[in-house]
Amino acid sequence: MDLEKIEEELRKIVGSLDKGTRLEAVTREEGEYRVILSKGVHSDRAVVSGDLLEDFLERGKRGQELKKAVGKVISKLTLINKRRR
Image (cartoon, rainbow, N blue to C red):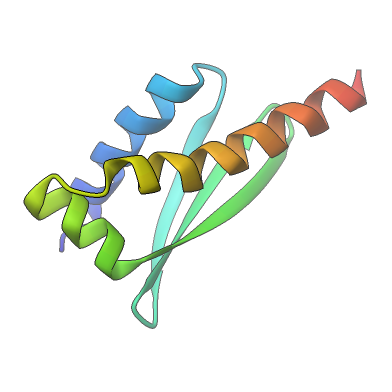
């Protein structure tokens, strides 16, 4: 799987879930992908399995699981950002 394609698709997902959150990077480590997101001055990461990304990109399946994993990080960043104000 190509990291550029993965980043492009994840940018679409992150944008659809929250406009204020940015996808900073996607790295591959031992069959897993680390998705680094930031909002304001805070950043956090989600660890997504290679199988999950492969099913989503190649077959269009398990999109809800991917959105849920990314959504949890976005929710955490939003809460941290609100506490900071």
